[in-house]
Length: 459
Image (cartoon, rainbow, N blue to C red; front, side):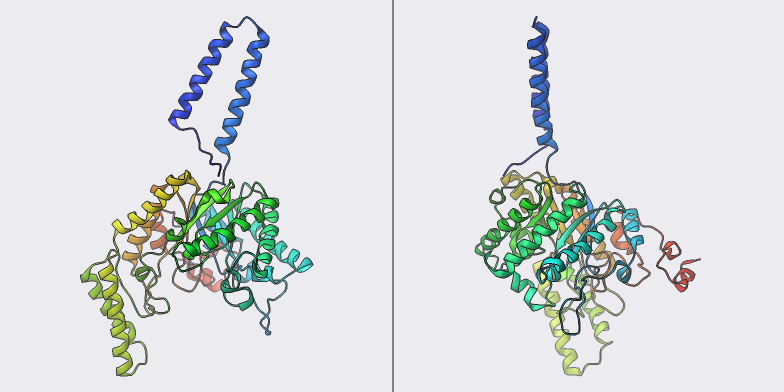
């Protein structure tokens, strides 16, 4: 794999030495032709070095995922994808969202796309579906935001679910998937390779995480990279390891086998999951599990969780069983420990992997991170703990030299930068932790705001 780096101090010294040597030769030469030849040679050499120094993936810093617009594509009553596929922008939000994303301080958006409508289409139907996505990408880039188009399989149509797609490279599903990758790569190249990238698959599972499954994914990934690169040689591609795109999967990946430039290596981070996933199915009534862990605050979390259970209609037996589950959950989490030291150790694994393979740290991407926020009626992390964790993860990514993507912009599941209603109220805790610029919640400036929303926004 060819890796490009900007000049190091040693590289800059070598260039200066080269310039000095040629200047000496030119000044001593009595032949204008010889002097001109030496200078032309220098120009060619430096232009080659400069091209190598500036080549590589597009530059990204801070991003946010939009998941609800182009994913979970609408279905017909028969369970097929509606045609044309995907939601209109107006049914999700408006271009004002992109303007405000830019105003917060983000420079790119990760657009999560359900590949099912593309995989289930041929010919004219496929072309029309890709054209819909092109309009979406252009709507975002017009707000001076770069775009990662994230192929993000979901489970709503079994034939095109992650389980159906993730298999040996020669399955019919993956043959079609490679064709979709080619079509999207060509489309993004048309929009502009200076402002777009294609993420080949979100969180590829290929479990268990024993190394063998990672090699199976690697074989699939090689084919996907080749399909994209043949269609659009200059396009940035986002790749990740197996095991759900985690750090564990990334460090099993051998980047030399991909044999391609303009790659961003992505990893997702939601550790410890007992903290970030509290309030989600399986731990819906857990509220206030702290980060960093402490026995004292875990005891408070049990009290918060008990109060939540009082909102539910439960028999005494059901309530006792649920409380026992929550005690077990909190006890296991506290025993395992969630600490800044563990967080730094995990990011250190990424650093060591990149250094071992000669990957510039600017080619790393923390592709998703977030924690469920508690509300009065839902479990999740308290604001103070969520702030500590989000800020710590963001700072570790920046210390590593990696770009990062917050999960997510607007959804109803507790990890949302803005409320999922039409008002799009900003989450000040997350914005503070991400080091971004809060903007006033004034819906009067939004063209999609209702008169009632505008009245509530005024003092």
